Amino acid sequence: MNDLASLLTPEGRALLDAVRGTAPADELAVATRLRREHPAELVSAALGQARLRQRAAAKFGEEDAGLMFFTPNGVEQATRSSVATYRAECFQAQGVRSVADLCCGIGGDAIAFARAGIRVLAVDRDPLTCAVARANADALGLAGLIEVREADVTEVDTAEYDAVFVDPARRSSKRGRIFDPEAYSPPLSWAVSAALRAPRGVLKIAPGIPHEVIPAQAEAEWISDRGEVKEATLWFGPDVTRGARRAILLPAEAGVWASPDTKLPDPHVRPVGRYLYEPDGAVIRAHLVAEVAEDLEGGLIDPTIAYITADERHVTPYASAYEITDQLPFNLKKLKALLREREVGILTVKKRGSAVEPEELRRKALPKQHGPNSATVFLTRVAGAPTMLLGHPA
Image 1 (cartoon, one colour):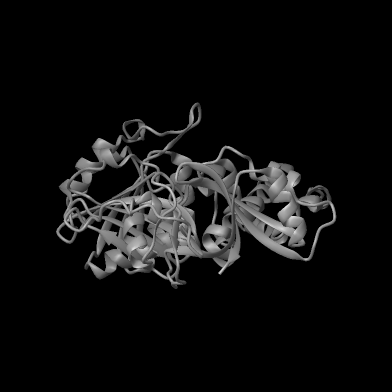
Image 2 (cartoon, rainbow, N blue to C red):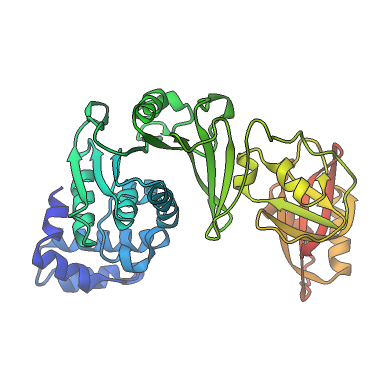
């Protein structure tokens, strides 16, 4: 808390400007120079904040991250700005004008809500986290729309707000990542009850949540950003389709979904065709592979493997397409001979349903004389049999 307070002073802000963009290799020299004119503790705090800002740029962009304040946990747990912006735009489209952001952290979601013109009550029980959220609202010119309150979220009255957003803590300092939703802080059951009491409610949860614990009243959504699954959310309110599942792919905001009434049966299993499709992780997490397979006029290569195969090339935002040139049983010597024959020097290894480590296979399979060509090998199962599929992006 003292570090943050000192960084908010004119001297602290000037130091933050002075150390902006400092490379790790240069920190010692920069610190030695600055300590001649500034307190050592303040110089260390500025350099530490500069490191956090550099890490945060991937989530918030360089411009915002260069103005904001962070804690190590805050950077790790904050919502990526593209995801927060998408959610805020959904609220805006639903007519939400005020939201209670419970477990607000350093304010990533609150910032997106405020930028959408939504009034925010941001609540967290940690004093330092609240101080950082307050500083961030001020740094980005949003203090007029964001009220930060230090409190236990379970004791906050949210009756006056159009919506409730809850982001329970899913990590513990002692146990690390928490997988049991009832061990979240606060527990998922409390968060669900808070969402149901509000006109609209959204809960941010881990993307690996078991489908069987998702409440029947919720519409569940899995979000990926540039192919990487970021989070799952549960939506409650008059606009949701109860029991529906949705996958959202950013930045295009492409979406595939299914309700309980429209959910398709598992795709049929068929021989490997000319093309192999690797569904986006959000599609897989949402159990919507069947919907994408139907769109691609394809089937699965194995009943337990989420690879889709088809004879024709289809353009889709929901899966990456590869043209398959070779199919062979798992055999390291045969693969190495084939790579030598094709003069492959760059090998991308993907696996699903295989215990082989990609780095180990790449080390053993690539010829010593690397060729000019590249290839992708899939370590997987085809109709239950360990198989290697060789190809390249379509």
